[in-house]
Length: 274
Image (cartoon, rainbow, N blue to C red; front, top):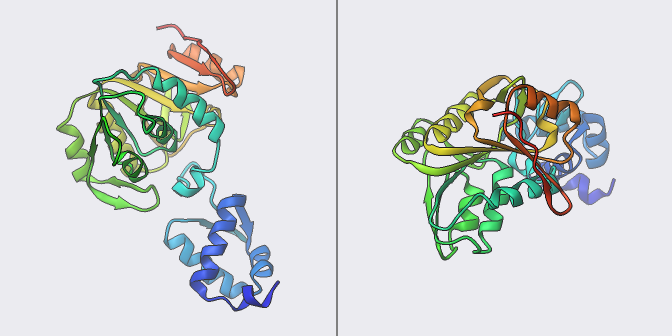
């Protein structure tokens, strides 16, 4: 361990520590103590602060940035995971958007991939409604897009606006399509870890004439703490082609209409009974 790393201030050390954990997904306290050349006591103080900021979560002997059935990952970690799969699903979703539509994007990194593609200006004019600061920043200067930012209480963990005022703003709107994602899909239901996220997603789904769920295959067959809605609330589910056959059979049994999106060119449509 270099002396410069050991001698850096707490804020700089914590920033470097967060970057490492977000990159690796998890680390033990002992590993971090050796890496940064400080005591275990100091490491635990640093991790307490990073946990307070919502960047990581402590567990016995270490820290993680990965999601669980109870906690959602920090947005910076989610931005780095399953990028090819999210891109494939977003490319397919883009085909559902037509000029003149009003669409809503939730605060997921899956729908952020739609915003990245809308920034290219290929589908205009368009009205985009979102509570996701990342998407707002992407589209704020895009010609041909009427951007409507949903206000509320800012949540740095999700980089989005949430709360009662956000829900009330959504309830005043009616859009053509809502594109949303969720943390887990199992037994005919979509799940999420956090109740305050669930209430916003439900309001968004209620505000749309058509709802589309975007998920990467790792979310299939998993559960989280809160049920969001039955999968029947979605007109279409888009999932990447890494989805195992068993998970797709479960969607078929639940009579869910879904399409499998190829990560390398094209897509394979597979619709469950409707």
